[in-house]
Length: 360
Ligand SMILES: *Cc1c(COP(=O)(O)O)cnc(C)c1O
Image 1 (cartoon, rainbow, N blue to C red):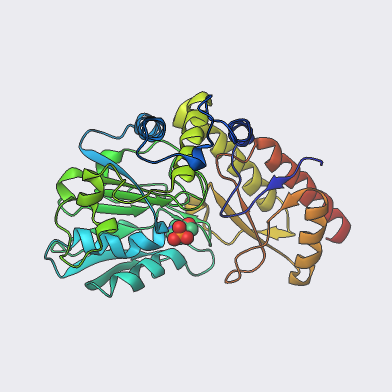
Image 2: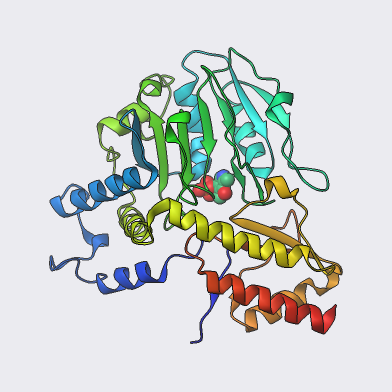
């Protein structure tokens, strides 16, 4: 089979080196005679795999001792509910920034638990943009401030971190975690579904400041109570062992790439190239203001919408797959997560130029 490049928004491309490692150990992990899939999560082999993955993630992100890392299930969507259940701590209100589809879903879920104050609405209009924090109406009594650093569907990304004083900052980093260094200390809680930039679907990473743990509403299900999961090392019940293992291999791969500083440079270069190709043509267009264009998800439309099907068919024939835009946006979307090689972006740009010459 010839080389293909997978631009899916998620579940997404994984590093080829990681898939090969998984293949090699599929039937027999390090001579123990078992696949990782078949191991007890309480056995010393898997406990070591899990602990190593946690340590590698801690190293990569520079997670301070003040913050706990949890490996959970239920996706980012599960956290939309778990966050108010755990963090309201008796308060009646929470602040949310609305910058697109995922913000809206988080807001809708939180409304079952508290009064939601939408501090600002962005991610609409043409070009799409993010309202500056000076215009936000923050509530000093809010239990926390929630935002979505990267809106996976529209490709709107914060390239700055909101400034908060006492109110804990909560971030849905599903499609941006590990794309660049971050200062974890500035966040009360960071969460991410793994299937974008971390590993296979089924695993959810939560990084939460210790002082926010232990205040869950009494009705909180045990599996979503950060205190109970923390005390059980995220093994209150059977965790998603294989996804956790593969995520661990991805963390080691990232370390071999030089860590987050190094991968951030590659990510920026990949995104800059693609945006430059789009901006340099009258045929393609990206609808996001240059100050908040995502490094990870790049939507684009063509001058003539009726060419979309042809573009996708021809791209697939050229080995460039999963470029269809989200149904709510239309057009195309190229997701450029860490595991997308720069050569894949070069191949996409060459294909786009060729397509424009044929149909533009
Ligand atoms: C994909 C995604 C989600 C949903 O994740 P699930 O794991 O499917 O629940 C939520 N937020 C963002 C920003 C996403 O990209």
